[in-house]
Length: 246
Image (cartoon, rainbow, N blue to C red; front, side):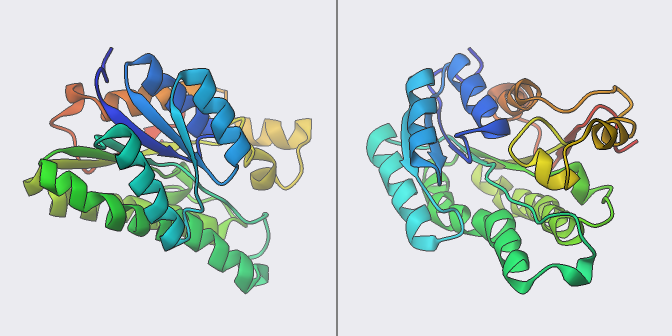
């Protein structure tokens, strides 16, 4: 029960890695708000883990503030914030990505971290404690061709993690990131462009351990980094990638 009596918000938790993190947190004793733009999916996961749910557009300031207010009203306080919601553009030449696609990727993957911080960091500062976890990507460390602006958004998230960690450490707030490799999530087909055995084999050939990241992998790493067992760890971007970045 590493997170016994802790409270947490996990964005993008209706599916994929976010679902795995929310499930792991609940199993470790936390009360979890499952937040997602998919309200029905969020409610279903919340029922599964005994948590609460909220619909949120993480790129919209009003929606993020409403999520934060609801979490505080129902949970009383927030110990852990996981910025997991993310999107990508389809694989294509960097100059062919539309402005609308670029804006969406940066709004969901980067601006969201600013918006959740603006809504919840003041609360954590008042309490003198808190853990923020940003779900970045190996793409921010070792970029793949044709995913240029997605790569850049995840590199931004890694730098933001380190900058936040330095600034918030005196207030007792730890900020870390996880860098997963591709996994069986709704984004996998978008990363590959086309889901075929040949393309999957090509992806897997770049991962020394020979498999994709799983929701369980992310849940285990997130639980540790957000627990008191990691109280001396801040500003790291932990690669949970089967050796992809070696």
